[in-house]
Length: 313
Length: 97
Image (cartoon, rainbow over all chains, first blue to last red; front, side):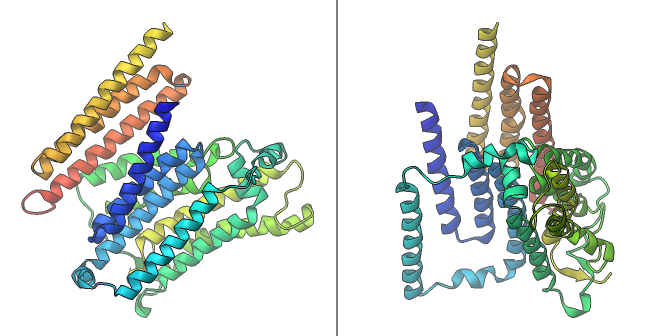
């Protein structure tokens, strides 16, 4: 017990130290590296809290995809880095920021340290109703049965985020290919990895999706792995990103949310409400939603990393 | 038998942790990027390998053991590739394939 406590305390100190370093460090690239390590440490914290689903998402999305996005942003910001580093915020701004940060920290501390007794929880209800969904993982049940509405909106937001990135394209290149064209290397180490890893990654991604019904995993984690494989192939120069104007590409992007919405609307007819599943058909319907959703999320994440269109078709 | 396996686990993981420690000390103490990469590979290959080896007797059946071994193999593959890429980026004359 004391050994576990020592590990937890060490982990907490490490997370705080890396977080402080990430904020304090002046170089953008170093801050991004700090942020990625911070995310991976946070994933360990979630494992210690027995929230393996959250840990997987944190490692894949919070650390992985966001880390790559921030790395790309840091690379683009490099020319302006010197000017930005010389700028110092005024005393008033520092003061207001400090006050606001202190208030948020105090509020969070109050929530955690002064819980109502017993702490409000829906965990028992979530587990008690699992048989009705046909699922074994209560997190997947929350995401796709109890609170499917939130998940649907989340997926729409993801597509909107991609539209936001695309809207940065100059008018002439609208509908063109995103990101730079990576030169094909004949015998590079990256090419070797990009040829060897995707078959493994695709299997692992599908496995993640499938196992999410009963064990930690799910559509988001699985699609992150699929997106990573695609990014690897593009970066190694083995393939090129498709022009964002292609109709099939846009269909893939919206297929997940569309199927989700269609199943949700059909809930009025086959069950009693929007996003309600008829008794006994919950699991097949959830799988029907999750498969196109995984494809859509993978495409969206990959294109988010690829960036706005930069080249004509 | 189970005691012997537990002792094997503790010994293998301890030796693995030692290689991680040695790799970290090397990362902090070695003078340039190439030697630091060399130190890191000790942690990746031997350290993680020994930790996985130590965990094998505790794995949940054959599928669990196979998962552990594939984690080690994937970490090796990623580590070796990234080491190559970094080494090419830092060597005089810049990155070359």
